[in-house]
Image (cartoon, rainbow over all chains, first blue to last red):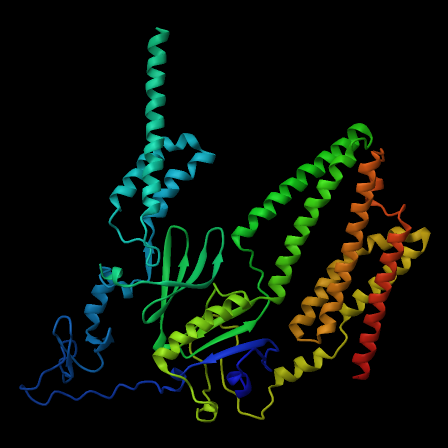
Amino acid sequence: MPSEVLEAPEMAMCPACNADTMVRVFPAILNAPEIVSPEGVVQGEQEAACFFHPSKAAAIACSRCGRFLCQLCQVEFRGESWCPECITTGARKKKIATLENCRTLYDTIALALAGLPIPFFWFATFLTAPAALFMAIRYWRAPGSLVRRTKLRLIVAISLALCEIAGWAWFIVYLVIAARMAK
Amino acid sequence: MAAQKFKYKRLPGIKQGIFRSASLWLGDDHLLAVNNWRFGEDYKRYHYRDIQAIVITKAPRFVVPAPWLVPVIWFGILALILGLAKVGMAMAHNGRGAEKVSLPFYECLAMLAGLLLYLVFASLMRSCRCRIQTAVSLDELPSLYRIAKARKAVKILENRIVQAQGMLQPGWTGQVSIPETAPHESKPQEIPLRIAPQGKADPAANENASKRNEFSALEIAFYSVLALGGVALLIPAVWFLGIASLAPEAVLGIAVFVQQQRRGGPKVSRWIPIGAVAFVSAVLYCSLMVFNVQQLSAAKMQPLNYHWGLSGEPVLKTTLAAGSLAFAAVGAILAWRKRTGE
């Protein structure tokens, strides 16, 4: 891209693709890639070695577990130095929200189970209503969406499921009473 | 939970599909791209300090937002019901009573056409691709597909990034070395952000520039059909050929518009076909509406096929012919100017 397009305050035509283009460039583009310097080899028994690479000299300790790390193993995270294992464990156990890259929305599943069958397969609510109720209660404390924080869907799902269960209960009682009356 | 510490604020722009949606959220120190598939969400984070560039490129995007489907389906079903009622009445009672449903039927059709035209217009003229570049990735932001929203979102985002990184000095392009390759790209067919040396012409740009000044075969076909249709409308024996040519005119007009849009041709080349199609559609629609209003007020009984014709409307036929010929003449002048390079 020519510099005129990169520095243009508004949309400018890119000569390569003939499309109007607006570019916003930030100082990070000028940063040279960080090069990890080769680690020193452990000289004697007195020198601390990296937990993961015993032949290499330790440069820093993990802020979380305290293991010694060489420069290669050190991961900068939240302004601290972490070891790769702490990062992996945190991501796997979903203890660090900033490492999560997906979440299951149990509230939406519960709401779909309670609400979707009503217009199409209302008779299926005999099974889906208890399932929705179970899911809403079971996952009440489970983390929902990272960006949407209310429990409204779970509350609506529980209310709908309870109404459906009550409706079925009334229907069954009505059938039993009607059968007895017929006798 | 650690997650409770973070609060996100939604950026303008959301891509709302039936089964998927995408949105952008501002965090304390990062931008969060959320891809929602109804029963789950995928996240991608871009820390403000790592963002190198944001690029908005004007491009056609045929995205139909899910909320738009509601009026489209509503008017579509209404038009279908009224159309079937119209045909049913015509067949059962030899056209008697069909005029009563004609007006709402054409109104539904007009609403549908209006919605679809706006969607086509927004998709072609007001759409863009927005990409974000870091040192290790070049990703598209799917939620920013309309230019206005993308500008608004980028403006907000820019402030956060400037707070984290500061601003580039004017003339910074002179300080940087030119990278040979771009970082990893999610879509290999897209053009990476690269800084070209000044004064060096791109061969692709020259090719596009030469095409821009050509009068394409599609344009020739469009203006020829327009002219022939206009002439046919003026000849009583073959006027129906003029009516029949309206459908190919509409298709060719939109095709010419898209072609010129891609080539970055002059504005007049882009807008004349759309203007011609809009004019022809408006005249045709007016003729149908006027005729049906007359029918409704006089409560006349006419056979169904009469409603579709313009045989009783010489003024409208002449208007249609004159308009078509005028647009074709403008096209001919345009071709001549392109050839002579004026």
